Length: 113
Image (cartoon, rainbow, N blue to C red; front, top):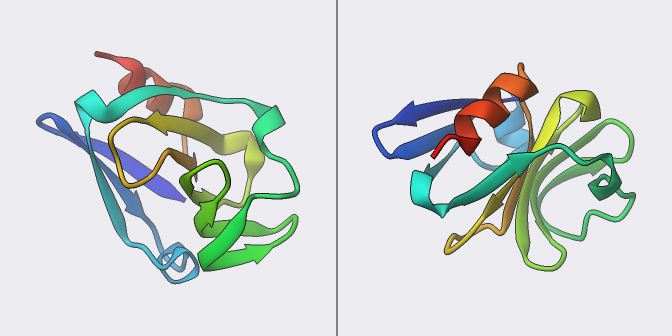
């Protein structure tokens, strides 16, 4: 699970609980101007997430960490229903695929310019 907060012009994506260990990441900061859009798309949750380095994947249970598929992407998802995709530009990651407590509210915040 990831919590998203806005601090000035920077979004802070904080990885919660044991997910820090599984994802090998605790916090990601992204400038507001580097977020292209946030959306949900079940078609992007394919079996093949890409090459994992570093991270954890137990198919059907958890995907967490850095995966390389058409660029470097960060995953932290257990429940696909609460997952959203954050498309980025000029950043270390191309996409963040994260599970959040309230996807609709989080998408609204991230898509507000």
